Length: 467
Ligand SMILES: Cc1cc2nc3c(=O)[nH]c(=O)nc-3n(C[C@H](O)[C@H](O)[C@H](O)COP(=O)(O)O)c2cc1C
Ligand SMILES: [Mn+2]
Image 1 (spheres, rainbow, N blue to C red):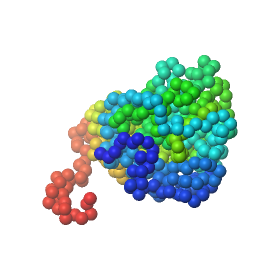
Image 2 (image 1 turned 45 degrees about the vertical axis):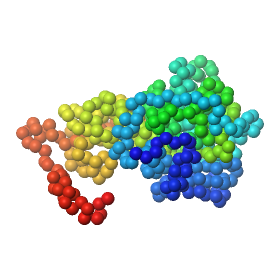
Image 3 (image 1 turned 30 degrees about the horizontal axis):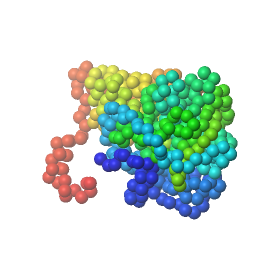
Image 4 (image 1 turned 60 degrees about the horizontal axis):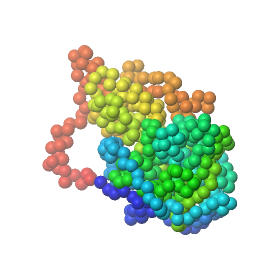
């Protein structure tokens, strides 16, 4: 297992440097199209993390694609391969690890107040060609407190710059941050909120994880990194943030205020439409000396948004699923809205129970569920497709449930039905009960495991193509 405890984003960047996996661009770039384009090409090519040192119109450097490739995401957690990932996540997060509060912290080394606040000088990137404007908030973690329970929430919701110190806040009603805001709004009070960017990569991963309600993502990060996060209290209110964050924005969302924000290119690979959303008013900024901004271009997998939300939410859903249904061995959700689940089939109806459990864990919002047997390698889509084509009989194995909870960004439904979806499940396990009923056995696969084992024992070293 590799390193999993990072002091800050800088330590992780230095590690990437040692792997020759960061590119430094020192020439001036145009934030209207060049950061978009270079980041876009880099993601598609499986390229390195990128640091833009000189951006026209802005005063600070910016890092993109920090976790924008499978290898970097796995390095951040010190995990070698995807087939270990879900199990390692479950093992590490058995117990949450509470954070500690420090008196002084690097993230408060420099303070910006009042008229000196000008968000455009900090980050002015247009991430996609048809975005409705500049979105300084892409990897911006919104930190708020539940006014009833006091529990902290950290979630990544996009932010559209609307003025010198105001940002549209793209948190839909099913997110935890927005639910906190709803509670403040019903009381007629402004919600205090801190927004941070540039942090230890486990903070990145946890803030994009879809969890059940009431989970403090900083405690989850502590569990994943195996050591408590160090936090510091904000200057204006009683919210704490990770001490080594590069940037902290403190401010309020007033009740009843809405502005149009968006359109914006999304992790689905499509533009999402402009919406009327709450407004975050920044009243104070603190940052480290020589701060580094962090941002992401959202798009389909492979991308940071697809990896960060997709993989961590997959692990969380796997954890929930195992608590609900026996025989669940592994789960893969690389493509948005699709879950492939591997089971050791124990009884008739078992695959259908798995589907129900996936749909029931609505915080994960997978609409398509494919259930496969334990001999299928879910990390290889050829193997999954082989199961789909050889073990499925459509009239028996396809399950359709109309009008379930869906994702508001799913392009397959029109606006008036946003948030609703049709659940679709395929039981791609071998129909052994049906065979058994007729006194037959399902056909054997041509795997020939004994021969494979014997050959590897005798020939392994001579087979030069093997790693
Ligand atoms: C780059 C990036 C951008 C994201 N933008 C949004 C967004 O604009 N709105 C949203 O609801 N979720 C967004 N997410 C996903 C959320 O972070 C994720 O659903 C998380 O679970 C939300 O936190 P919560 O569960 O505490 O509400 C984004 C994730 C990433 C990595
Ligand atoms: Mn949450």
